[in-house]
Amino acid sequence: MQRVVGAHGASPVCRDVVPGILFLVALFGIVTLGASGASSGFDHLIPAGVNVTAKEQRLVVAAAAYGAGGGAVTTMIYYLLMACSPLLLIIGGQVMIIATLAISAALFFHAAQTKAAQNLDASGLLIASAIQAGMALLILLWLCCIRKRIAFTAAVLGQVARTLARLPELIVLQFVATVIAVGYACVCVLAALKANDLLDEHYESIGVPRSGWSHLALNIGAFLALAWGGLVIVNISFVTTAGGIATCYFEGPAHAGCRACCGSLGRALSFQFGSIAFGSLIVAMVNTLVYIIRLGAEQARHTDNGLLKLIFCCCLCCMQCFERTVEWLTSYAFVYVAIYGTSFLSSGRAVMGLLGKSGVGAVATSTLIDPVLTLGTLLGCGAGCALGYVAARGWNNLSAPDNFSEFQSEVVMIDNIVGIVAGGVAALAVASIGLAPVDAGAKSLFVCYAEEPQKLALDSPALAAKISEAAGENRALGGGGRAGLIRA
Image 1 (spheres, rainbow, N blue to C red):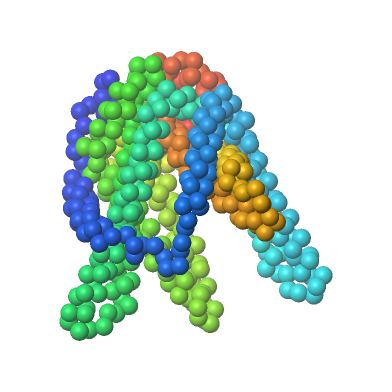
Image 2: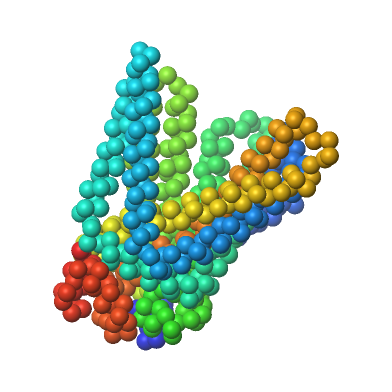
């Protein structure tokens, strides 16, 4: 395969044109329906009985602003920590998971003992405790098996954080894509409501009562449209980030600059758009299938058929695992789309080849980096909750009357809770969006090094030596060095 990124990259070629055209046609229909639904007003979107005062709106906005600011500052500090101490964060992420599972196991066991002392059945709690403890032990065993990968992943994580710090455009693009995806979701909701009104009018005109199957079909179609469009928008940002990081890998961070972001974004919106639409459609179809099974499981909950509940529970569990696997494989396929400009199916075959050579390395990298991002998101959420509480307290101090009574203290407590929730949600969103490019960058760097390790040795010998040393590879970088490093 010939790459399309870097100074000597090949000219990109349009791939998967048909899925791209289908998406644009579907997008035109959804936007048309959504605009028609918006013209009828938004009053019917507000649930009956909901009455939010202007004071409450200002409180939520103020707390969310404080929380978003706290999440942004925490994310910037976390990028600095990832660049300077990635190994410490990786260890901290794993400790967080193991400690959470161990505490959950202890709590379940304590609850089981309490029930047993009351002569009640505690078998379910004991099973839950054993599962949590077993998962903690499995994670410890997995860390022992991939202990040589930890230092290598830390080197990769640190390099990605430093590159993204030099290319903040990629982080800004992630926020822009999220805002567009939220706007698209609103349009989808309006389009679904408009389609529902049109169906009601059609059945009324022919004098036939509307069946429940039409409702189900409309819900499934609306969910598929929502998932497909949202995934396309987010994956454009993912492919752009992967291409930008790959450009820095092949040209060096000092020579990439904004050109890397603009070139990668241009390819994602043109030559690679069809492949992005195709891969996103596959994931959206799997998401929709899981949604259908979840609807069936919700219906089964209201029945007395235990076997039916068990079947739906097992199906839902298996499909959710399949869904996550497809999403993970698709993300690596998008990395190949970004770097080599191949079609989605060709990229999928390349991913299978990569996993055949270094599948354990890819899985290990994900299992080590994902908890780091989760830890950063939780820290941002915590900062947002604290600042939301500060905003609520300041708001209450400013708006409290002189004749403040004990009864009004309950109102103040509710306002504090609202401030904490609003600040935490805003910070959680900002932190999760701000850290999302790290995942794309790590996967891109992994693929680049797996496919062309010699390039790093030529352009960045210091980083190559650091990664080689971290992986326990003492030989010179080359074919054997690549195998030992990626598979370690």
